[in-house]
Length: 135
Image (cartoon, rainbow, N blue to C red; front, top):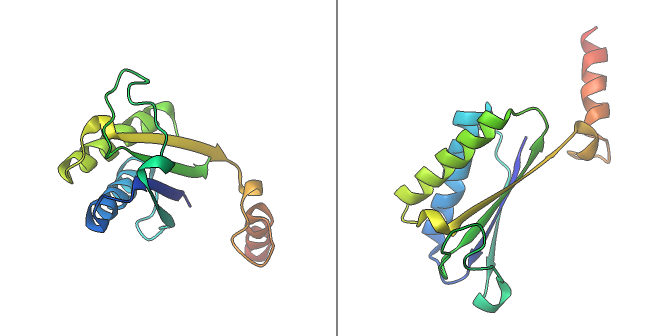
């Protein structure tokens, strides 16, 4: 149940930002065993002066089209899955017209205790209730 947040410059067309969101979801499905309908995305648009990104940090050359893809998901993916996620997401973004240098990805891992899907109930407790009901 990943939550993907895309921060993009306001000047980019919505269709291009949506293509980046689609690339993120496809990459999660193909590399991290995320079910296709497990889709939670937030698209945030910023004016140029609201996105302060070092243009060369990390040995890249970011343009005014640079975007950040933040993915928060449960622990359990291997380093190799994460590497494949980065590669797949960026490759799909390039197909959508992005430069590889303009796609920054940040992963945040947590546990079921760090989520509530609704009703003020920790996801960990919800999963435990389901297991008890199955017994």
